[in-house]
Amino acid sequence: MHISLRLATSADAPELHALIERSVRGLQTADYSAAQIDGALGTLLGLDTQLIRDGTYFVAQDGEKIVGCGGWSKRKTLFGSDGRADREDVLLDPQTDAAKIRAFFIDPDCARRGIGSAILTACESAAQEAGFAHFEMGATLTGVPLYLARGYRVLDRIEAPLRNGETLPIVCMAKDAVKEVS
Image (cartoon, rainbow, N blue to C red; front, side):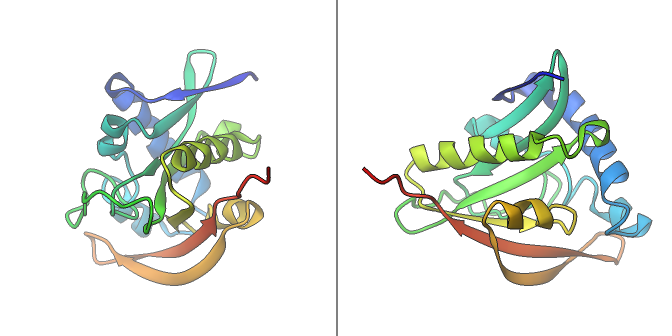
């Protein structure tokens, strides 16, 4: 397995939609019920094409196959896909706001091989280059162990309402950027 990272393009959207569904249905069943997964796919768990348009969404490839994706945002929306009704696309101020770490999904056949960590490192580096000194996210229960291992701390736990009447537990997390010592 040889993984390379690149920025996502709009042409990747069909493959990303399929990857996201495989990832959620393959990796999140220990943390969420089938009803929660069905209610979250396409709204809370799905592709946010604004990240692609902003040039802040990465894909991990093994050869030509996309095996992971994730990004960061300079906009206020903390989590959710294009289908989420209450999006907040207001631009953040890097001097006072935290960049949002968003929409990480890994192919179940490639899980726990460092792909999520590699994408997270790329996101944090790019956000820092854009002037952000802090990161925030709304993590799924499935992603929390990775983010804790990477220095994120839990701020809050929320129940996000789903279109089918269910709720999805989300863990709000944050981390300060590591400052280089000169």
